[in-house]
Length: 112
Length: 109
Image 1 (cartoon, chains in turn green, red):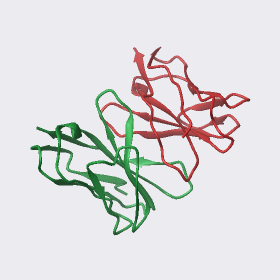
Image 2: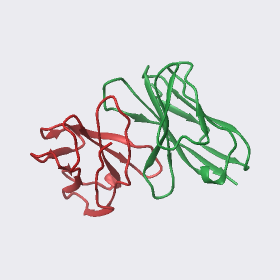
Image 3: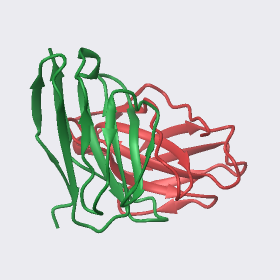
Image 4: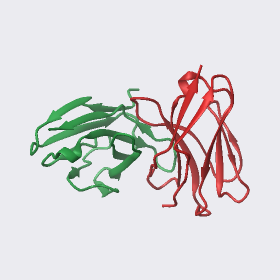
């Protein structure tokens, strides 16, 4: 099993550009989530999904959109990138009613 | 979500036990105590969780105070590979993991 796969690993954007961070899992997990981690900080929850067709906001949702059309994929869209969105982004998934969250290896995004 | 308090950093010597404390005085009766760790340049990984009783697994032990207002993650013999940021998180199985800043553990050879 590949687990949670995030692409790309690195990305540089110009202010105002849009892009989609990809996240895919092959474990048939219903729950998926996106976090961002700024230098020296813990992870902050952006959006999450408890199943296909269901998404909800986390702690810091502004500037990001998500959709969940399949169980496997949970893309994160930056609508108009800003320097404040420079961060490392982590995607995670877990089975329902468990605590065993599996994280991807992250996408390092720089907005200039 | 109930909050946790952890020291910003701790140091340990290799092959010695490490006790990582976590205070959670506002924990509710249904909150589980989760521990995750994040190795350098990696995503977090699950370490252990518990509700009321002490728990052991191949990675660590979790000691939970009788009043559940604090807990301690125990690494029995620290290795250089255990150098990481350790996060103590409260919540149920249906909720989200809300991370604090965690404790940065340094392991000296």
